[in-house]
Amino acid sequence: MQNKNVSVLFYFVKILFIFLKLFLGEGEFFMKSNGPEKELHRGLEERHITLMSLGAAIGVGLFLGSASAIKMAGPAILLAYAIGGAVMFLIMRALGEMAIENPVAGSFSRYARNYLGPLAGYLTGWNYWFLWVVTCMAEITAAGIYMQYWFPETPQWIWALAALVIMTAVNFLAVKAYGELEFWFALIKIVTIVFMILVGLGMIIFGLGNGGVATGISNLWKHGGFFPNGITGVLMSLQMVMFAYLGIEMIGVTAGEVKNPQKSLTRAIDSVFWRILIFYVGALFVIMSIYPWTEIGQKGSPFVLTFEKIGIPAAAGIINFVVLTAALSSCNSGIFSTGRMLFNLAQQGEAPKKYANLTKRGVPGTAILASATALLIGVGLNYVVPAKVFTWVTSIATFGAVWTWAVILLSQIRFRKSLSPDHQKQLKFKMPFFPYSSYIALAFLTGVIGLMAYFPDTRIALMVGPIWYAILIAFYYGKGLHKRNQETTAKNTKVS
Image 1 (cartoon, rainbow, N blue to C red):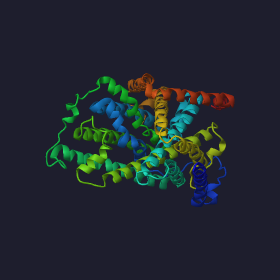
Image 2: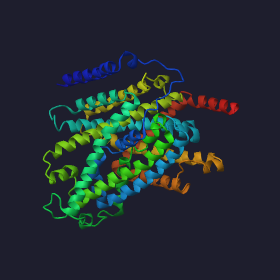
Image 3: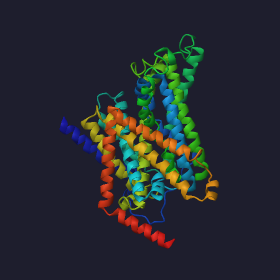
Image 4: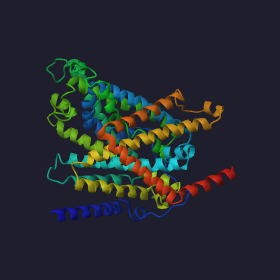
């Protein structure tokens, strides 16, 4: 049986390359280096990047993972999401201030390089690549788990591999076609959440599905109060809450491929924050008003319970389909992000040059294939330790997310200081309440890292993260990248 499974794994890996070859054609699959004048295509529109960032951020955490956060903080989890959302708004405004002035592929990695130094840019780019590879491992694992709802006899790793094959192929589409597909992927999740909120409000106000008896919102304080576990419970939940917001910053990665960056990025950054806050806080407000927070997670997904209560017998199957698309959507966005970040690192000379190659469709195909190959590790983990892989990979991603957000804030502070007073006044999309807002957001992120160190369950991230950075730094100096960057800086200074 073991040999049979290994043979099937080899067979599916082979199919990955055959499928891509047939799907793309010989010329697209076997990519040759393009000249330096070749750039990413600006095929994304405002609605694409808005839904892409929503799709990346609204993953399986809201549908299933929120139950764990509720157990920690009780109804006060609403406060944790609101505080985390406010900090994310400041981070996104900091990113937007730089992205609108300089919309480039690689975004915050390029800004870190420009304003914090070559090493910071190098670490940030590879960190974000690693962050999304790890996150995608979690998402394809989730896809494997969800597919077992319909096919319980099929091994989990087969569906994880199938998800990887499909999402990799999708990322080879022209960026406009990719954006269109991701738009509809994300829309499925959003429609489900909005419908659930409306149905829940009907229960709360009019007694819909409850015999006409309005449930009200007393469950928010009846079972131990609004802070049943005190402030400690809220603090414990913050790292999980911030993980839920991971992906919003992906708007910055799309900057090199979006039409009319000033208009599209400005609207997308502001609207995404409010929409995600409404989806998370709104959905959890409704759920905890209808059901005692102590029961959430014990009887299955609260989304399934809500739909079943109004008489939808197929609720479990419907929600399983939605969370499956949620996992695939987030994985789709992750492969997009890793490909673009690897492309940018190659342009900077901090990754092999072949990763800067573009297909005829203007897609960084070699970089995407490299990321997909790294994701095969996730498939392997699904084969070896299917019960543990999800917990392992999700606990590591938060540390990488906090690093990315902190670098965005530090880069924005240096960016603003590098401008003349007149240029600062002319900025089109200013960070509000600068510099106090930037420092407050940084202090909050520092607090999240401190909490991760304090609680045993999250300490693993503080072990894996520094080891990864140590490997990167050793490679940076071992390969002489620091000398090359010094020479480049000296040449640029001499020319200027």
